[in-house]
Image (tube, rainbow, N blue to C red; front, side, top):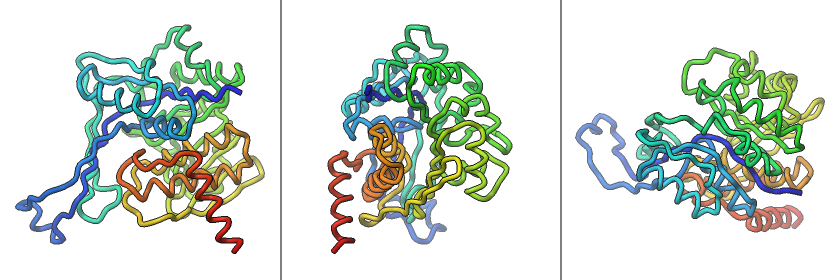
Length: 325
């Protein structure tokens, strides 16, 4: 089986600022103090691509970055993680998206400020040769489909349909729109979802994508739009996997003190896809994904603490032995 993961999606810079701000926020305008700062390759697919490579899978990434030092930082960081970046297009005269997480006041993911990129999220239109290269893989994965309205109902839909014809497994984590979109968000995905095998969302995204405020009904409504499997990530409550007439809940795996939850959902996505590609039982896929995500929240930002597949297996076996004892 071809285990290459072909990833399409937007990239940006994450700037994670950690330290201790004033407890009395009224003093904030006059406060100054030291802080630790980490800059990482992020966006809808940066962490996911890095995490898939960390798990040992071949990964090639199609995206756009500015033709400047920040764009080079994104490419070089991903290359260091083992991601094939040949499909990343440098776009002159544009600016990178930047998200700044100011974790100075007790928050583990907020407050957040951001700058939108001025380039396209990925290099559409693709040529026939570029599509053939994208589909020379076992899995086609898109992240961030909902974020940019200019790609809705566009060429990516055709690429996903062609991927299914060629026997690839297809995965989407649509995330959330960055411009106004009334409920249900699924209206922007109605042409894409019939070509999706695995749909990954968090609980807010799942409910906003449907007309329901109940997760089970939301999942059923999404399944009826075409995906073969829907996974809803629920943060500290774990995750639930849905197929037609069947569901399974996986509790969250806690492996230490929560430092921040940035990139935990991306780690879950990567680990679930890794296990799913190996045809493990769905229950094992969810456990593997929850364990990987549980590791990442014990460190600062994104992929820095993403475990290898061997490390995840060791942690799972260790917990199983504890429960048996």
